[in-house]
Amino acid sequence: MSDNFSRPQHTAPLTPILQLVNSAPIVLVAFFAIGLSWWFLLIGVIFLVVGGFGYWASWQRRFFWLNEEGELEARSGILFRRSRQLRISRLQSVDILRPPVARLLGYSSLKIEVAGSGDSRVILSYLSVGKAQELRSEILALAKDERTSTQSAEPADHWKWQVPNGRLVASLVLTTSTYFLIIGAVASVAFALVEPGSGLVTLALAVGGSTISLIAGITSLFNFSVGRNDRGIAISHGLFTTAHYTVSPIRIQAICVVQPIAWRPFGWYQVAINVAGADQSSKKSGPRVLIPVVHEDALPELFHELLPSWNLEIEDEWLASAATSRWRFPWQAARLAVSLTSDLFVVRSGALTRRLSAAPHERIQSIRITQGPWERKLGISSLHADSVPGPVRLRGRGLASSVAVHTALAELDRMFTARKSRKSEQW
Image (cartoon, rainbow, N blue to C red; front, side):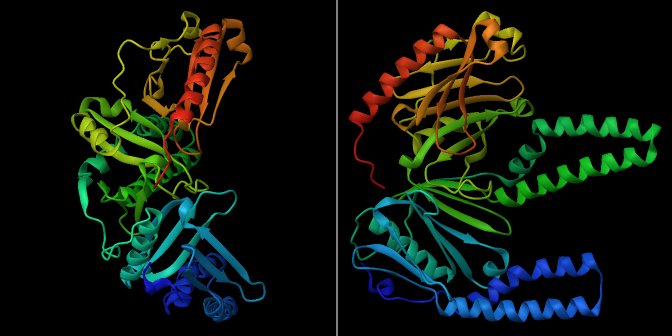
């Protein structure tokens, strides 16, 4: 282990200023919302001065280092001291985040997450870009039990795919929600002819909300790239706030290949993922997509390079939905199906937006069968394969109840067998 992080040390000296800058917009918004009054300006100045002193005092008491046992220790607190130890052997992710202001000044935040209940992560804000990359490389090297003289160097990419920004913008515009927006806009215009004031307000809210959501998606996923290196799958994206994730393939618990109806003429797909240990309290926390948009011709290469053990080419092994399911799911009954391959639990669904979801047998958390009143009348049930929190849901709907029970028992056998034969999960 390198001596660079073996002794307690602070984050960057500019950390209190950067934290104060991040909180300043809240004061400015409140200032303009309440009114341009001198007394509120005085309160804002006092708030910034007191807040700045608090950030500085907190920074003085915040230390981090890698101890002799190979654990990351972090101590903080002014009145109440807090000491935390993260076991690198249970590492889930170590990601670099670069908010706009910190990015301009050459600083980054490093987020380290380990397996465990509750808040099992530490965020080191802020470190210089070089120091953040060096610490991340050191932690990843410890996780892989590497002891080489080049462990501080960034790993070389063996394969990398860059999403064209033009295709990204077009794909976000051509989503199913866009068509609902158009329908809503037409309805709002029609309503405006009857009630001019209310119709225009409805139109403004609909267009404004969708525009803000579209811009947020573009800025978040701009310059998206995914690659493979010695330490796992490297994901990077962001226009103003950039994010860099390193994901071990063993942490990917489930995937979903998605195709909205507007993407079909172009042959585009999105691959969403559930990642074990990722903070899912916010949609902006942790990787949620393996790639936001990719052409169907590139999908085989993508899976071959990043997830070679995930074989989604299924032809005649589908368990289709019952004939009576068309009364419950009239639009998509023909596509509803479940398949149990030797390695994966796979679900097919969707009419306007087609989805193909899958999870390895050994990574499924539990199996459930649910049946609502309407389904009970039709003699059908839904089969759920529970995964870790994330955007992917594995739910086989419209199955005949007897088929659902038989499939659930077969999947339990596969789960137990796969877990017995599973190899040690190393980073």
